[in-house]
Image 1 (cartoon, helix red, strand yellow):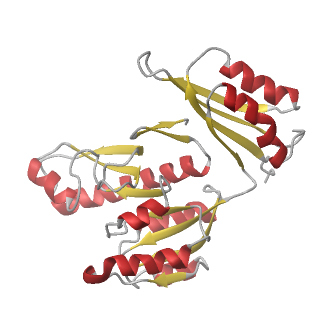
Image 2 (cartoon, helix red, strand yellow; image 1 turned 135 degrees about the vertical axis):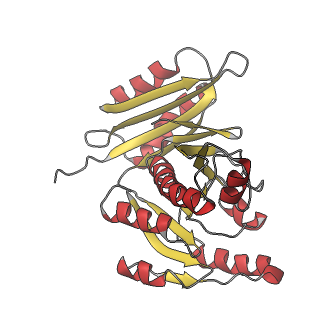
Length: 287
């Protein structure tokens, strides 16, 4: 297997104006960088916001990490950029939260083990013990944190204290609990949830039952960042599958499980590869 090249990714958002692409590209060129991917997007004339993702080879680039940030800062200030730099050799650490359903967790672990998802998984957390054996198959520590309704805030604070400093982002792989604001605020736009509906349709609980009652001809799944507004965070990825009048609720669930795991995996891949920028309550996804 060929060794994967180490790369540097620069994500930028700023007011749209001439010269941004030229300034960024020239900066990389002047320091012997080889651009591998470059993608841009501008909003409409009323909003006038510019977004850019540029990925370039770390090999041969003349500036080490600390000097890169310092050297790029004058350009960022000139164009009033919000920006971030990431290195592919620094894999993101993710904590996975699950409840009883295993389809999303199984899929994520398989993709991670096969090398498709370049991330580290220091732990899996659950409010049930049902999936502990699955975690042990992949030699990943599994921790049981029960959640009681009357002491939810206290129980979630225990989890926060446990995971502090251990991860960069979280995945809710059908974790069937609503996170308290204290948890969401600790990981702003760093918690990815899979909702078993094509949002904004059927927000909340039992979307397959409600889809059946409505007689829809499409069902889907939505991966989004968690905010304190239930199932209304910025959407990263979505997909659908057809259904018809013959489908029962179990049929819809069977079809939906496959969509859920595909959509969640795609959203996680986009996040780990630094392909997502948040704009208001939407995302710019550089596929």
